Length: 332
Figure 1 (spheres, rainbow, N blue to C red):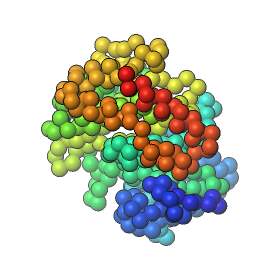
Figure 2: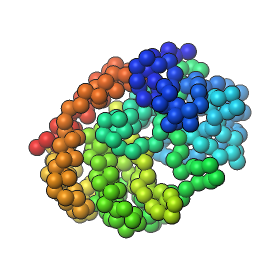
Figure 3: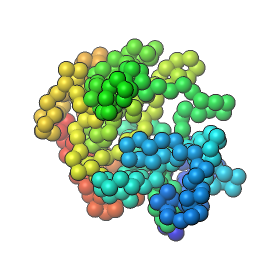
Figure 4: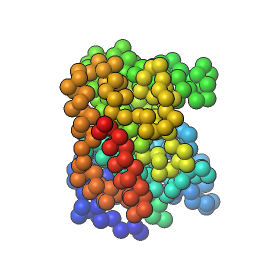
């Protein structure tokens, strides 16, 4: 069994399980074990195959399997059965042949989400890691669209723009819009648009410096609470450069601006592009400068979180180097 020395949610030192603050956010204070008794989807056994025949699989988006999970009677996380409402999403190790460093996808997503939340104050879905019996880690996140009596209405930006595979092509999530046009969706549907457009601006900058080039239209959404739409907490944040042979600069083909950008060379993207993006989506110049400056500054907490993460030593180095490089691109 893997030895835990930091909280597998907050990455705080001195914990062999979820810390009290993590339990409050993830499990409403319940003392839930980070060790799963359920089999990993990669387990090749008759017992595992029988279990997965009745498991409530949510979807397979791209190459990442997702499973609905609930807290069982013994305070252990377990797969939701068909017809049972899962309150958590479990993302185990992907199996696609073209994904590099598959064993560390969960640790990467967890670290990236924690940096977004702890360092930059970006609202994220509550998240952590848990571990199968073979020590394989899985990413777990609490569903923010579920409440005590049902579900909140949630619409991703692809749906809000009216794009589907049928009318937008197989790459409809990537090729039909820019982040500027995403901001227009917020302005159209959100009453407190000025607040959420600023949140969106921060998230787009964070995706750039963290090399999350999978921030496509379905990875942004609006959620309707109390009859009013707001930008959903951030989800699916990951440094894709650790897993893809040919990472992109932006997930959306057009990049930041609605007329598109020249994205053949990463050196062509920098501070002035984000300043122009901020102006176009209606942010004051002083706010744009303040936020970009905040993302360019070194922060010792980033290094601390990387060091405490469940990435390998080599991937910690790659993560640190890649994000430092992108951060410095925003200085000039």
